Image (cartoon, rainbow, N blue to C red; front, side, top):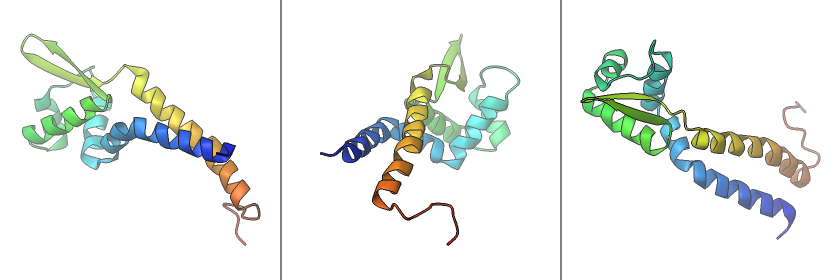
Length: 125
């Protein structure tokens, strides 16, 4: 396998490792919940607070929070009987996403230049 094909395979593997996070972040409802968590004045919101700010039902918020938790995007802490959700401080998933984006920015332009040497992307002909 040539070096370019090896790099593309590596990129595909990195994409698969980030798949849950990409799917979780790709949904507008989950983006809204994530923005609510990020814009909160305190660290951690309860489902009821998220429901009020997003105008979603409690079951919908809980469902989307579970997807975000499974993807490593959101974490939860428990205080007595209350659950508080917040953007995950565990950088593992964020680092994987950054590595994927950095790798895309490195590989794709180079692969494009190799395969289409006269195609100047972004330039009008």
